[in-house]
Length: 380
Image (tube, rainbow, N blue to C red; front, side, top):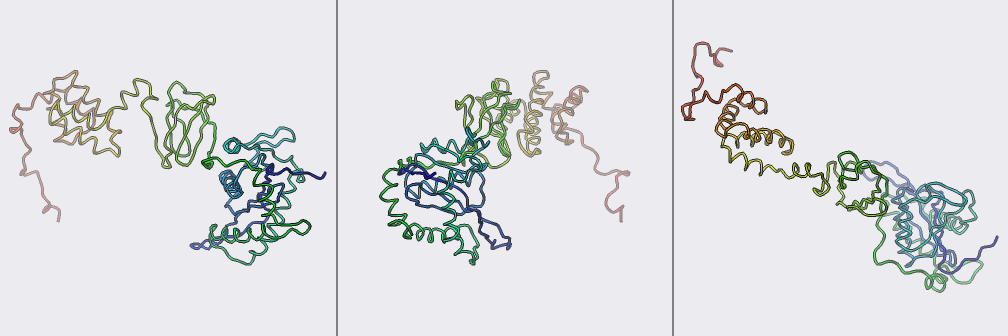
């Protein structure tokens, strides 16, 4: 059936079957670049570029650059049934990728995938791919490229020739037809370009955090066990529950955890407010030896938070023992490098601290010279 294309209505998108090899400068490894092609239905005005893959991020960003190239937005975009566009192919009701749907909503266009195994539904794209392969890729086949950017510079120069080359059976060029027919009918571009968003469903763990890549992000604790939707942008993580945004975080690319205190249960929030400075201030009020013991324990750990529970356990002993006894127990522990909480408890339970003289200066010391003590000269 001969199809009639209205001005500015449809943009047909697809990937070329041919790929272009790119040689790594450092290793000599050869990777292949994919060729994205977009063709307007009425004027045949064509856009193409090279990307590393046909995966969702490249697929979405190629659409963004295609819209910017034509300077507007078509009413309908007609893709093929590749996985980046269609999650579940169906002749009548295909299931679209959520990120792809979000792109369409941002630009105010509709997505109408071609029927499975019906290439004539996107004949413009098929013909556009053939033209790109003959007039651009064939001319580049003897060139060696060392970067994706280098390849795209050459494609851009040759693409201009394609769009200004006269039609064989029609008057004018793709560029002239685009300027007179398609351009005036296109929808305007939004103020901001669409930013690729990875949308995925996640379940809230029992610790009221969700995981994206190697990082954990907190959500309000009452959502533990619920399935929510995570939207990951380049610098932002947004979390949605029943289509309502519940929180957002700055995106982190390292392993670790981002926690907002408001998301915690009351008991957890109080624990989270402890800092090394607060612990040392409490220790100083009890005694200098307690402060020294707490400082040493904190410095011994890779991260201060690993020492919080031990230090809190020591400081809470001040509720059961006088400050003087606790300070003397820490004095004994400091002199003998005992930095476990059970050591302090054992000293207090055995009353060792009460055997110390009141004057710290008169503490007994071990003899430095004795007939049973041997020095390095005994081991020649």
